[in-house]
Image 1: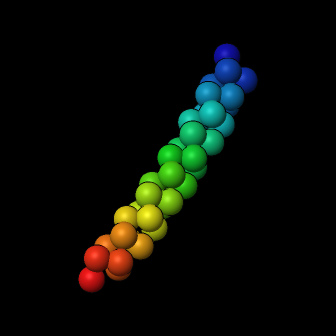
Image 2: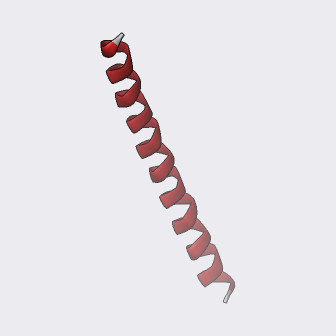
Length: 38
């Protein structure tokens, strides 16, 4: 039971990190686009 929970937590943390990375990449691209417009 505990093993399954820790595995689930690890997956959640991993996907959260990937999501944060994707958001950061998107913000960076959006920022570049905004800079280009100005």
